[in-house]
Image (cartoon, rainbow, N blue to C red; front, side, top):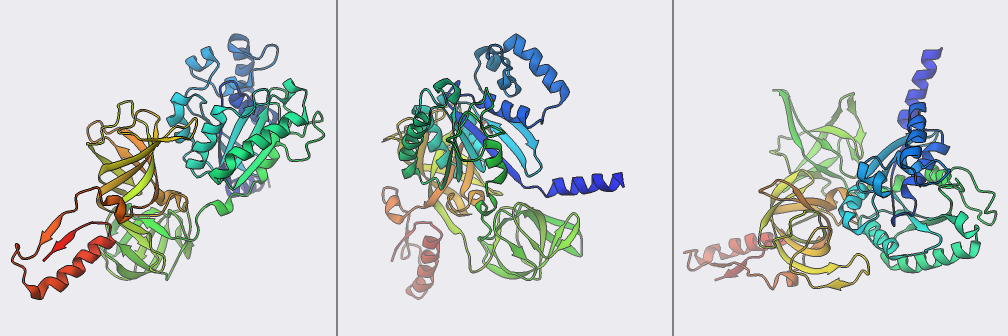
Length: 474
């Protein structure tokens, strides 16, 4: 009977959904302390961790007589010496309702790339504000970065309410200031919670010190916030990663479902060949299934023999992605070395890898003031809107619509370092390419007769549809 109960528990635990979240805020706003308190009060720490925490508090603690919960997250020697977060720290814990992965991200401007890394997979962001300081430059910067990353849920955690005597007027003013700033950024869900990470007010349990607050505690909100609709289940995108050929009788295409739902018998089209077929079977490690959805790793077999290789994509014929060699994107430069816009890079987009060049930097964004300014090249942690041209067409969606097919990384071809990450905005309009030289094809010089001009014109139109600009001269 006991074995059965354990099995039921494990099955139930496996079915819990996972919430990925990040914390952001200025230095000393209490990010690490909040997460440490969350783990401590929800009783998710082991005895050896508690013993180490008490021991470390005596050696490194900055909380006076109290336990310094920040030491659960700040593990680097430099972090403990300075009392700040430098690198992203991840912590996993679960409750009866949900599993969590928390990314504790640094607050300093020079660690912007660390925050981008921590937030790239997050569903929710907790932005901390010191109740004594209110909305400051770092608050605005982190909110902008959260909106850039497409995070749909934000918790404004007004921390250190104990230091302002739990004053409701202080909380209301901060909330009004924040909502006024965040409104143009288009974040769909913002929840504001007053709390004290050090004292535990409104972290796990509702606080008796703030009876005027009628909302949920932080943990209660995290357990119940709805994230199921955040994932794109509409646009089926299946970037092929591997062609599986274990024997002569089986040929499947293996990958992870990036978005959308695919069912056995669905008509699909392969990009870029535009060959049509139907899904014969959906195979997983545990056997065949009738349908699949993100982020399942599956193998699809087709009814027809179609030549498909790594980097190509299966989609539904009535729901195609954008296909182009030119597009604009928001780019975050992550390399210590300054960008050289004349260099070519590799772009890694879904399972595709190809050459890419930077055609134009439209403007650079000041992450502190959100001002836009002209720019010739980017340095570490700088963000800009950039126009790219790739060596071959990519199949993508705008990042705001589909994170999986709207994101990419740039790779330095010499060092093989990831030098930038990007979020695609859209295909580039032809007017944006007028500054660049468009190659001309002189038909008469090539000896192509008038009888072939119509066929050549169709080819040029198809190239134009793919985002490749060619000028036909008869």
